Amino acid sequence: MKNFDELTEYLEKLAMAGLVSVSVVHELKSPLSIISICNEQILTSLEKGDNISAIKFSKKIEKALAEILSIINSTKSLLQGDSNQIVGVLVNELIDETINNCKIKIENQNIKYSLEVPDNLMAIECNATQIKQVLINLIFNSIDAISALEEKWIKIKVYQNEVETIFTVIDSGSISNADSIKMFEPMYTTKGEAGTGIGLWLCKKIIEGHSGQIKCTLIDNHTAMEFSIKLT
Image 1 (spheres, rainbow, N blue to C red):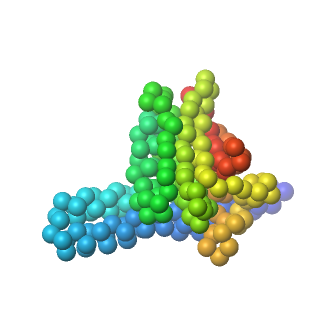
Image 2 (cartoon, rainbow, N blue to C red):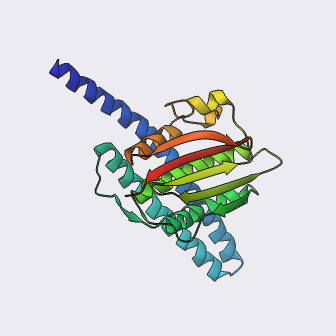
Image 3 (cartoon, rainbow, N blue to C red):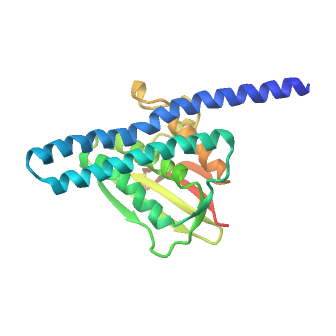
């Protein structure tokens, strides 16, 4: 029986590793997309003799490359159950860095976005790269979901109570009850061939690894993705 349990655990780890590998490809699309866009902007800027703008976009490429390395290291720690990367993180800085990573794609889609983030939020204990991955995934999912709508907006809200920090990403779209229930299952996607069905599953794994919860709900008939991280 012991050997059977060990074999089952080993097979589960192999399955998770396979799913996470697919997800890494999905997560790397974000910084790679930023690098591609910035590279085009650099070439355009240089043609115009605008060296200042070229330098600005080159720095964004440097940040995107650092993000790729962080995603790889973060995924490695997720598979190994490594808790060494859990540190005190300032929530406001976390949100600022996330928005900077998403801003180009948001603006390219002509989407309005707003933040409801108090200035005095307490720090949280977390793996910053993983939590940014979750936020970026939720925001990019919102962008994809509303890109064809006439009304396009995304709202990011963060607040704290006595026990936890709650992050919410709301968009101008809506979602069916059936999709909201299944969306965290591996390989389930509403994007057809464009989706991997892994992103939200990995988000769930990351948040649960932080002893938190994630869910999809409707706020005023608009899709809202919410997750929580406990305060220490």
